[in-house]
Length: 234
Image (cartoon, rainbow, N blue to C red):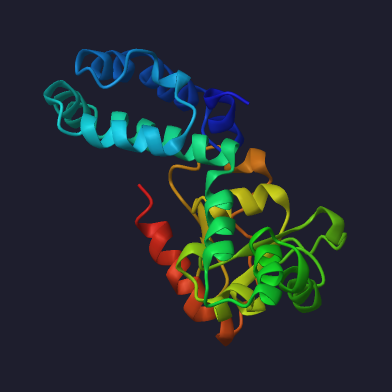
């Protein structure tokens, strides 16, 4: 899946997806070449960490700063989305998290498989969510073969107890899991869905403004953390 298609997959309109893709392959790549940060198109970059380094350097390039300010942050937004795209399609975050578990001396060797399974949405964590929700937390769709075990408070910032806690998770259809993970949707204290303004074509993803989950007191702290990321997602 190329960058433009991925943008539409996560809810960007075709026009916005094309605009971001052209920005990456065109102007931003040209500015990066002129600043001697790259010798090829940014679309040829294969990993998000390399792109992150380039993006950080570009933030000090005068023409990028000027055009980005004039464009109301469009170019920095395009870079952010391209970094998310690279991370998503390469599975870098997952690989890094699993390596962290393997290297963590505080976790007994016999327990590491439990945490690895939880990170990939399997094992004890997934079963806990199935027992709790009996289906998709949002739609109620009951065939759990098609559902994804999703952490509310992200794995990277959760402690080992939170990583296995079913109250730190939702059981979601894949389309909902993707936009929840990318912080384009979240839920209020009453369980009502909140949809980010950047998720332009959310109805095409099967998302409805009337969606609501049965959120308990034990979910509130983790969901509050997720909302804080949602509101800072620009």
